[in-house]
Picture 1: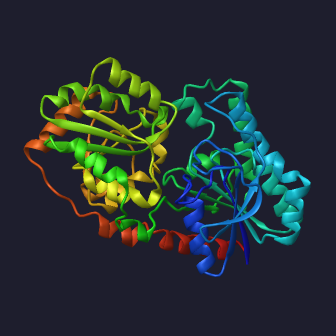
Picture 2: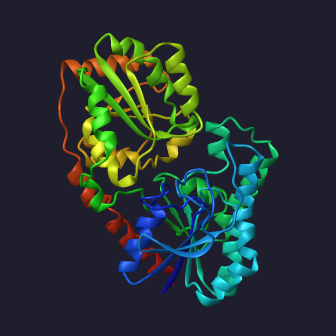
Picture 3: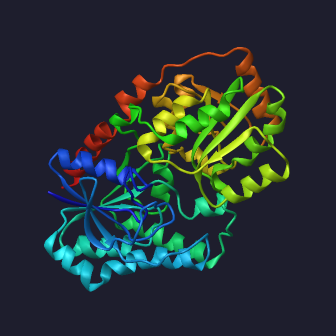
Length: 399
């Protein structure tokens, strides 16, 4: 069976996010489903050097890279990149690829939804089944988290496109546990929903050496407690409350370390410099394989988001499982149902916009530290191997 996994920001462990398409595809291939990831030649999450175009094999995984424009920030260049990803699949080069790699199943992962039209076209042309994979609810995520008006033309366009996707897919897989009813209100047929969460690669529990480990240890050598964060440094991640708590935490000899990149990284660096904050350390992103070793250095981990009604449908940050795999207590500011941190007792919950609440929870932990054992749960329920088995069952049910 031939599977296409469309995701405009798909990467590899060595070249950067997003990782889910790579790991799911690897496991599906082991289960006898020959899977090709269809990504964009350029996107803001990639650390890949050079523009790969067309068919390539990276880290033992087949890819097709749709030729696309480069961009910076969230302006018109990024919007054009989003549109060109889907439009590019109607070009002669992709038609040749499709003819030689006819799909039985097409998975459309909506990091944005504009490639649904190409996916539907090829699904009809080759009598393939169409699976819609939803991680973020568009355009609600933009409206709630980025402040884009629901009446903005881009918001309207995304809404029309996403609602079309709900109506034409054969099945919907969502990373958000409580989203089925909402999707049905937008046109998803009954009995066509499955919840398959984010997950973890089994090999990611292993430690890997990297220069950054010694650098972080050296920076933290004089501190009593460390708070770590790994991942994107952007608006949705809401890191400023943690940074604003740094000055008060310094009085208790607590350090903060961010490892990652994003549109707000420079702003945070400038804030730290301007306010002469000396207990915050910011590092560039590292390969996915190094993340477990980085997390292992810290005492507790951090995750947050802007408060929003959207989280009533569930949450899907991959870093939760990265943290749990290393048996870490997690400072969490996201109020959402079906939160594995809450379910396994590894959460220090704080009010997401309150630096003082962060300080209070950290000092509470510092006075009465405790350990948690969450890795067994992650390995049992959230490995990509187990998630791929769920995907295979979905595919078999609609064939």
